[in-house]
Amino acid sequence: MSEGALNPRWPRQMGALIRKDLRLELRTRETVVAMVLFAIVTLTVFQFGFGTRDGDLTRFVGGLMWVTLAFTAVLGVGRSYVAEREQRVLDGLLVSPVPRLVLLGAKAVAIVIYMAAVEVVVIPLVGIFFVKGPYWDAIGWIALVALLADICIALSGTLFAGLALFTRARDLILPVLFLPALVPVVIAGAGATHAVAGGAHDLSEYRGYCLFLVGYAILFTLVSVATYDAVFDD
Amino acid sequence: MVIAARGLTHAYGDRRAVAGVDLNVAPGERIAIVGPNGAGKSTLLRMLATLLRPESGSLTILGAEMPGGVRTARLGIGYLAHDPLVYLDLTARQNLELYASLYGVPDAARRIDGLLERVGLLARTEDPVRVFSRGMAQRLALGRMLLHRPRLLLLDEPHASLDAAGTALLDAELHAACDDGRAVVVVTHDVERAAAFADRLIVLRAGRVVLDTPMAGMSAIGARTRYEEATG
Image 1 (spheres, each protein chain N blue to C red):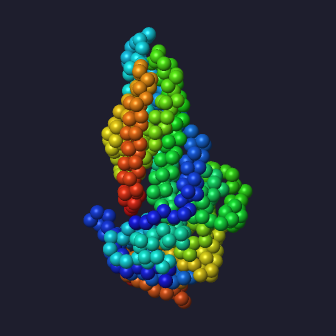
Image 2 (cartoon, chains in turn orange, blue):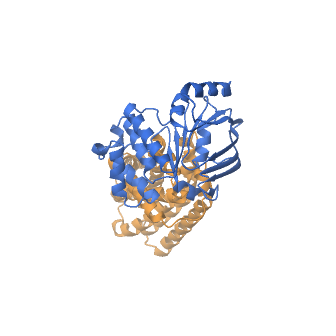
Image 3 (tube, rainbow over the protein chains, first blue to last red):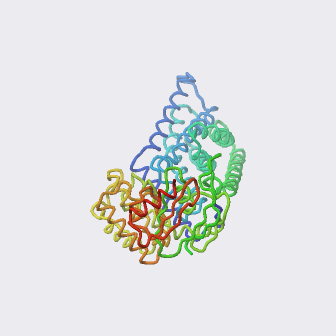
């Protein structure tokens, strides 16, 4: 049902929902651990797949990192409503006076935190596995673009996960919807990473990709605001 | 009126689950909605709980007209479903703290302690719900429903999975709520239990109200007879 504007209690409600997700994750350790393991395995497969024992894959570093992170994001986003679905709690949240937009926003923040936890492992591993160049000098820039990309992933992922939540073939539908939406994030993330760690240190190119990610985040925020009601309705 | 519904309908595909229900509920009323399987009881309750959008008709809950006033209405609704609607990997206290934050319950810690004591879970507040029996989880759900002092209590088969002590506790809480001027609507298939609890009996069949009668002076056998006449 249509809800109208946010109420003044929403920051407290969102804080409670984020705390709940983090508590559940700390207790069960199901999502982040699976995401980290998946990312490590994927990077390892890439390393063997390229078959270069002592070759330098610096120029591919952006693609290697962001394809890994994109698939890891699909895994994480796919698990974002598992507790609500499997433990049948969703009606309890939906019957409460929490705006649907706050439910989506809280999930998005939790996903940003999960992705950041994965990147703490993935970003250094990419440097160890694939790069002989000046990667470590650029790690701050990479972390910054990773944070921006995480926000984009979380905004689009939460929306698609919410849409898929009420479908029977949700495990199939979510990647089909979400992966194409991730392509621009992969392009921008890989481009920005390559700009600062792929050889030349081109900050103007890096800035362009970051602005693109900001635009993507704004777009999906607007789409979420326009559709949040329909995502959870009935 | 706590609930004023006119001509509510809802369909799942081609099957019309609720087909034009009118319902008025006053403060302090105890209403039992009974009917055979597939009569539309749970669908009607979900509409009253604002979880399902009526396809047609008008619905006003606690003075807030749907769908515009939905969040105002939700502040005053307590909903007890088949499932306890609590996270199994959180403790009893953490679950109630979460809901207290969502509803903006003042002095939440004291309210939670008081409720956990009332539902007999004070000794198990730090245990994850996963280790609770079904009946204990349902007691916690009762606490969750009462936490924000709702003015309208909506319950779907609330006695299922409760033992005798749990049933007595639930009945006592519901009677106390009605004495306090809150309205209670219970969906059940158990006519005898409905007769013992309610002061008004509504029978649904094929999505329509086929009997709406006060229970004053009616025995359980009388209620059963009226139910069977109404449902054919």
